Image (cartoon, rainbow, N blue to C red; front, side):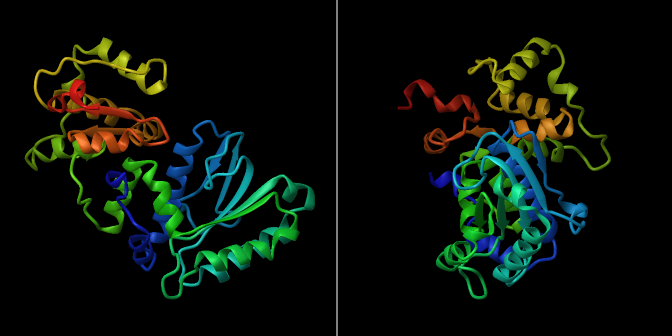
Length: 292
């Protein structure tokens, strides 16, 4: 699955040294949780200018779990980007344990997230396991640590989020054959002159109302497959990118984070192995009937 390994642990560790990481890493966690447990009843993880508020960094309530990343039930999340993640985790854990009664702790998980891992000044997995072991008697339902290695693995399940994060850490994905709706829409808008008004989404959607309804059914899960006649090589890409970019904020983000544009056979095979269902928009040149 090389096409999905976009941002690596070392990239996250280096990015953690920047001031921007303090607002972006919580946003990354928020996006990953939203995509991992879309039916969560609560997902409150402030990010950007909303960080550094009093109280918990995140609260999640979900009947589902997602592998080693999101526990089922209620969970309290703390997120730190500093150079001493173990100290930060210890301080946050002690504070939350003190301020949470025993009944609440028993049905709640504590999750600490850091973009750092075992680099110099970081926090390696053996030390993390020992740290968790020493706190098992504090009455929490579960205790988890998600470090830079685990964050990078988590992003592999959602390549669109990985590509978004790559722009934040300042790297350009080296592997071709895969793109996202928002990347494609940016390419479209960049073709306009600076003094021109922004291209309207309706330019690509006019007289396609029935197709918009069909596309919505695909993203909402009512249908599983949609065949569109392409008048040009990028006609379908243009249409899907315009449709998603024209939706309201969170809905557009949720849909776009599980949609990938594929124009390479190896990339198609790679993303087809993802554990989470994605909407894959195939380039007409792929010849899917011939791919096995």
